Image (cartoon, rainbow, N blue to C red; front, side):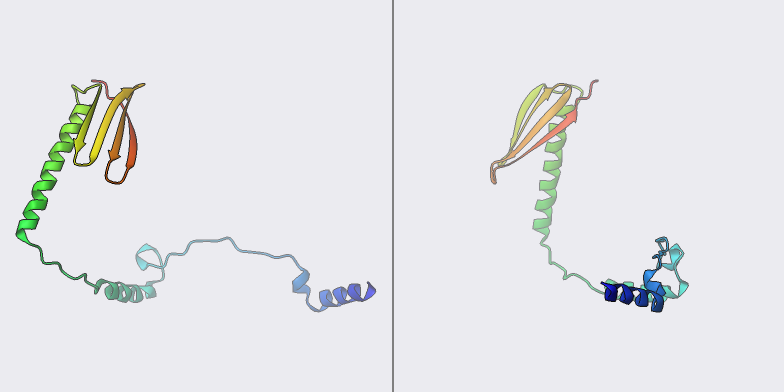
Length: 138
């Protein structure tokens, strides 16, 4: 016991820094980019890194004009259908409840406690999503 006490006292007298209290500085954010107050010598390094990353280009896909036209028509029709569905659910002459089917997706809605509850079911994978929106009063 005395040996351990003497060793501790000897260690404390030889290395007083080990025994003293620990101090720390406050953590502060220091920007790297010179545009935001960082070191101006970082500018060339950051530019060269950005230029190196910018050099990568994804391979270009050859697009068939018929496929592009088909995608445009499909997108336009889906947009119009979604606008009509939204009008029937949330518009001025909104219905109390209803159901819409588009392919394998079924959308059911009804009003409940000042909200519109929309259930979207995907028959292909069995997934379902419920959306609750506040009912708009006109």
